[in-house]
Image 1 (cartoon, rainbow, N blue to C red):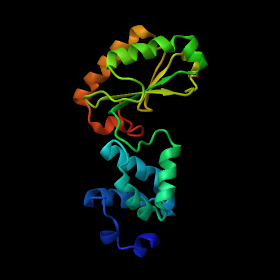
Image 2: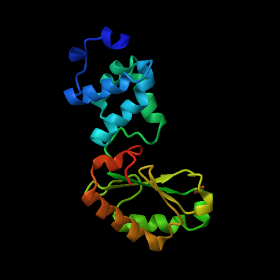
Image 3: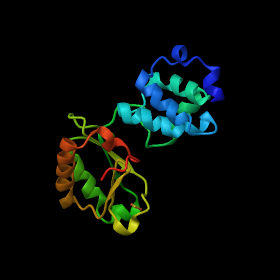
Amino acid sequence: MEHKEQVDLDESLTFFTDDLREQALSIVRKYPQPKAAVMPLLWLVQNRFGFIPKEAISDLAILTGTTPVHIEAIIKFYELFHDHPVGRYQLMLCTNISCLLNGAEKTLKKLKEVLGVEVGQTTDDGLFTLEEFECLAACDKAPVLLVNCRWLYERVTEDKVAHIVAELRERAKVHSDKDRDPVAGQG
Ligand code: FES
């Protein structure tokens, strides 16, 4: 890989540990251009840490032959990437018009009550981060709740909230941190 040969990774990468670097390089090698590996590398880092630490940005730029500014711009553009720690389960409730008309406001109130957090906050146990989201293109099933961009809960009226949260708490006991990964393909 031409790009890899241009840099002395041992000296250049200051944040990536050996195993992370190996995984990153195996991803980079799959693409004709290192730059094309930006998104999977961001997922790799986020899956490891739960977010993308500031310290990882320079290494990501080196690995992809881009710049820290480019990496930061991508992280900012995609709401699914986090530059700060979030819970293992990111609960994204749609609060656009169809969902609002079908009770999203009450659902949100209940979510806040059950989780004990406000929108944008993470529960003390680190399990849940509550967020409002724009239309999730499932208006006919409103109100909808998307969890980790993997599971779409439909017609989430306020009476279903406690059960969903309890179900995820149970899941957290038996499933690994890979639950964070929207492309992991776990059930
Ligand atoms: S308005 Fe909620 S899914 Fe479209």
